[in-house]
Amino acid sequence: MTSPSNIAAGCAAPDQSAPIPASVDLHRETVLTGIVSNAEGEPVGGAYVRLLDSSGEFTAEVVSSPEGVFRFFAAPGSWTLRALSRSGNGEAVVDATVGLNEVGLTVNPA
Amino acid sequence: MSRDTALVSTDWAEQNLDTPGLVFVEVDEDTTAYDGGHIPGAIKLDWKKDLQDPVRRDFVNQEQFAALLSERGISNDDTVILYGGNNNWFAAYAYWYFKLYGHEQVKLIDGGRKKWELDARPYTKDIPVREKTSYVAKAPDLSIRAFRDEVVAAIGVKNLVDVRSPDEFAGRLLAPAHLPQEQSQRGGHIPTAISVPWSKAANEDGTFKSDDELAKIYGEAGLDGSKDTIAYCRIGERSSHTWFVLRELLGQENVKNYDGSWTEYGSLIGVPIALGDEPGKA
Image 1 (cartoon, each protein chain N blue to C red):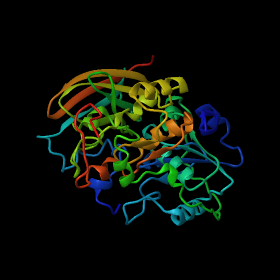
Image 2: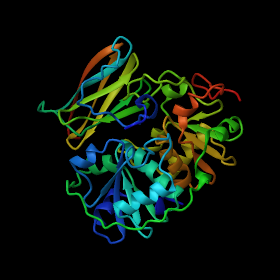
Image 3: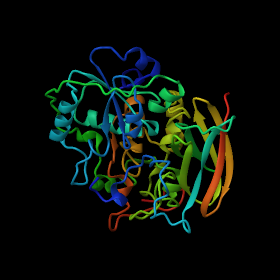
């Protein structure tokens, strides 16, 4: 990739298992992160995790890493996280503040 | 165009994996998903490495597109079946390229990789071998591509559809919420643009909503059917998704995708920008 990443970077989700890039300032960014797990507490990789705003409107979506990890860069406020997977779906509500917000997300068969 | 000609279901796709004359193509920005498992028989296109010019800020030109498809073994007679992650954003972007360079038969798998996954359909890691072809790309059809001057001239005149999230539209976020927010450009939207996030057009599983639902969504948002339309987002792939909905599913004429989108517009000197949740004045 030869073009400057701050201009031509795409909109696809970055690697969810990678460490938070050093350029991310946790004094300014509101990061929502956590692990998708099933009823047995095992991590669920390949789940589609959707970030919905306080009105329930879709904001972003990522695929959980093989370890079940997901991450969003949002803003302070109330957010809903919703996971869809082969093992079922699940939801969690979080009141996020600036910095790192850790959220657990459990999926159960319908 | 219509749903019948532009879209296939995951079910149809699985039943037609071995049908001659079809080429399944996964398109993504991050192709590690393909490498970890893909629809049997599918080849991959990398949105960055394959579809963008490596030097200039632009996508591949006519010659580069022809060379790419020749090298990947796609011929002009093939029916290309596209799918990908991110709710088909990059597959829709590639669909738009195929149309721009005059490919006759191209379709999108409804729901893309997500629907395939949630349906628990099979993957393979086998990479298909396709013989090289001599693909001929047509001159770009600029009736579906908008450039910046045209976008500025469209303020208050044409339908401008901003398909980013409401927070990006208002200027509260500069990028989708799964990306870091540091960006060089200003926040906000093009004055008079209506906000219809791309996601309004999709169900939770990534499939498109019904034609009736889609017509209602854009109608209620204020899209004027008698005017030409330009869709934009941040880098042009989410707006390809909406371009696909308006032109290929709903059959509207004169719909363009502004692929420069906000990363270009928000960096221009002197152009008007509106902040907040309302379209704003021309």
